[in-house]
Length: 272
Image 1 (cartoon, rainbow, N blue to C red):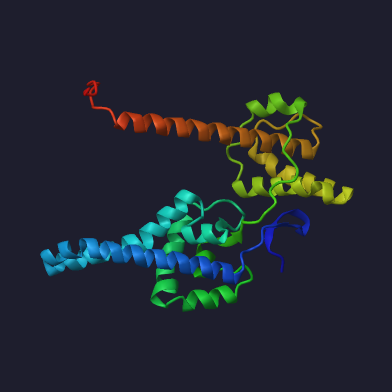
Image 2 (cartoon, rainbow, N blue to C red; image 1 turned 45 degrees about the horizontal axis):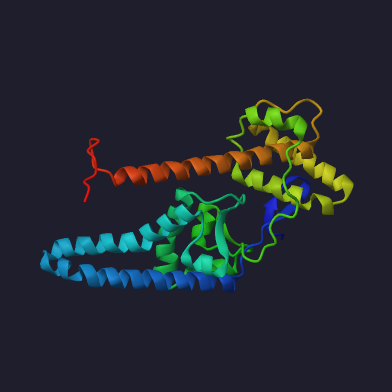
């Protein structure tokens, strides 16, 4: 069985799962960090819990455990789109089965099941599940529809995206917001592999992927547009829009941060 993203005609675009050793090392590092955080929080708030009633102390303990063992992993994986300290150190990332980035739902499912298969069974259930799955999935991955891939050491894209001049005007006006991340990734991988494919396979795969991308783009490209040119135009425009959106969000965050440092109701900041 091949590992990767399956596209038309049974061709798999490479997205290899991380090795068991790599995942285990990353998971162990994350576990050590979580235990350290739990210990520090317990030391800090332990005195406060002792000073209140036993019932409230138990409730506070439950909230603390949930926050550490579920809240922290969910928050980190959601904000970093599948990375954690352990995964960052070992060069791996959690992605959806279609290759797209994980969302809050995926991170929550992984964390909730992780309490059982990682902590309550000391990793035994996760170990058995990972070794018996072709992609090394634990139970949380199977339910969430995710798996772990290796991202370190890659050579990056060899073929740059190029906007065909004749499609620039159409691409600027096209709506492509509904294009799934996984499908866009599959198209990008095909473009990168295209020069190394046989001409017949290259044409067939480009035609197949263009046909799968086109329903998510409106209006349709001009009649007679070559499939590869269409994919280049869509991915190039999509990348530029995501970059522009990221810059706008960064500027908005900077403005909000500056506003929080000002006094309310337009009162001038005091001067020394």
